[in-house]
Image (cartoon, rainbow, N blue to C red; front, side):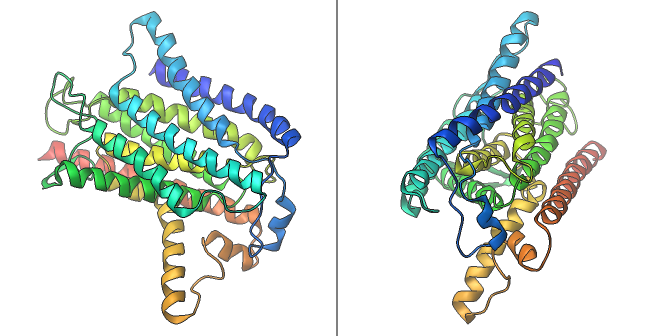
Length: 359
């Protein structure tokens, strides 16, 4: 538990202190955000706001994770694990793809950076490497960071994908979650606040998995997760880094996370869903991101088939803005939806545990 608190404290401090430094540095360099012309007109005032603030989130995440392990050496705590390093690596790799995207936008002064093919290739490489490595590194109990079985709260024994299909499935998860968080990052603080809630829920889930691990406490309801405590450190560092960044990103935002942050955080969700064996549960806990992505899919599908629009604008947070809601109203209500989804997800997680120990 001490390591989790250390990870959160270090990440929060680094993120909240580094972000204003980035604001000044990026402002001097002219690293400003371009705004979609077809978006709400109130957003045009945000043009030129520094972007690529996701650098602070990644820095906080790295500092919190490694800092907690360095402090843990003093009382013989568990060191870095394969699961933690793989999720951290996937998060960083997606952050690198996002950084290139942001950098191209800034250099060419447009709202589009990497083309779709380049972005998909970057996501593909990161996902394939993660998927292959997730099936390696067996521990003494024979567990690997990932599993070729589909999972809800734990592996579904009757649904086995095989290695090749599993890697394709990982690519689907990485692409879906990174794009979903990217689409959600359209209002001041919306993505950062929502991510802190989701990762906060996963701190509780992974710590519960650690306390009820089949390695330490074999029996009914135990969890076959390779490195739950290390994943809890990563979740705590990620949540705290998002909160530290949110201090400066809340409306009116002084900096945006850009694709550097949104793609990285989406990749983190994908990696956590695999390593915690909660791929289907993540859909519930991250329901806000799912809904944002679904609104775009629905809008495009209906418009192409009928030339009509379901929403005034997609992603659907803009639908409410164009309907007359103040931006802060949309943000706070969407945070509430993210909190409700996280609470429902944790309730489902715990109810499954109660059912398991009751069988």
